[in-house]
Length: 167
Image (cartoon, rainbow, N blue to C red; front, top):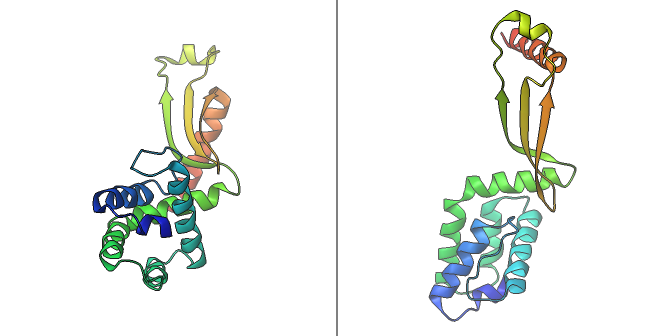
């Protein structure tokens, strides 16, 4: 983090700060005027500060204020942290959970509609396709599952039971 706050140009600092906050856990690196290894180190430093402060943004601000860095740059950086507070906490949660296994980030499903009951008895192809976007600590994967009639019936029964319990 220290290298980022000692950047002379105000414009380059703002670009670097935005890249750090907007892509803290992202692997894609955008050219922002400094070397990518320095940017990666700054992101890792901020992750460590978050971790040592139990992910409390106010404590992170206190730690950064204690470093004695340029006040104007700190104010700008704090405004970025405040504006993305919820997104940052969500990214931290996903990153932390993905350290223990794959985490479902998003999902989508496709249902194939069959008209008439006579076709349903002789159905050989999957009725449902489930697409999961998962995160692990080092990569993002898209997993596609084809669900046949028996598994779909089980899934529907389980969801109906959960709905009854909820009521």
